[in-house]
Length: 357
Image 1 (cartoon, rainbow, N blue to C red):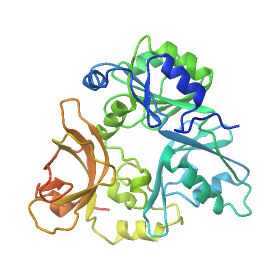
Image 2 (cartoon, rainbow, N blue to C red):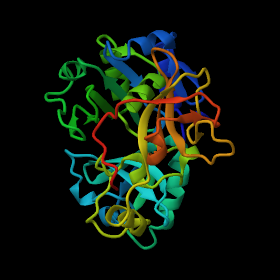
Image 3 (cartoon, rainbow, N blue to C red):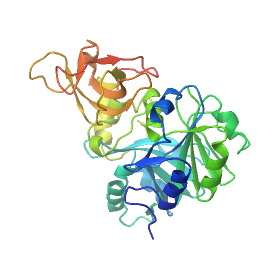
């Protein structure tokens, strides 16, 4: 029996978070009472947050590794219980249907992706199972996901597990917890566990860390330059456009998968014309993922890019990740929503990016 609420969060987990001060809106923890203050402490304290906007698919069965190898952009054979991996799932035209993190527990693989894409992803993946011995199951109600971030995050985790993961994508399994180190200069960890383990862990961690709403975690992801494909950006980008080759999300030697010819052709033959940038815009309105960007001042100009993800910044305005035409980005004259909209200010890339595909 499905125990989730109609907004997607496991009901008992939602009740637990609410009892600990969470304000839940539209399927996510919006805050713990003072979002503005939570934003201001984003880089100065250790943060604890619920990651229910992400969902989990469990993949099991004798043929599951081969099945996944034939679907995703990365080399699944490199995943181990100690090493997770980011992946893209593409349509035959090379456009991303989902961005995922894949990790292994025992004999099973888990796919972590935006919850608003989970049902469509599960349905489409099952179409390709055919006679393979593979079972795909939504386990988002069984496994809760939380995030811990901050300079002291590793030390705080060391009270729960012997050796917190130190390297990006590294995984530690201990005390019924799955702990994954995320990319970025700020130490950040994704923790997966079943209830009641996650309840006990949350109560313990909140003595050393500050609970915050998901928007703060979203902002940290943006600062780290991590894209997130959601329903409104599904099929909008080829993996290289969201810097997935730079981030290690594409293998160019693994063999075939849906869209592989397009992705490989862009890598071997083409010069990348669009890529993802970190930017700031002064606006009171939070842009939607998939929103269009335009060259400044050009009447009837076509869109030169799209918003990948956006969040209000601690100092005001909005920080965002945007896929832009490189030639237009180099002019620095880009506006949000229309050619006369608020101007974007490009910030330093969070990691070195090569404009080659």
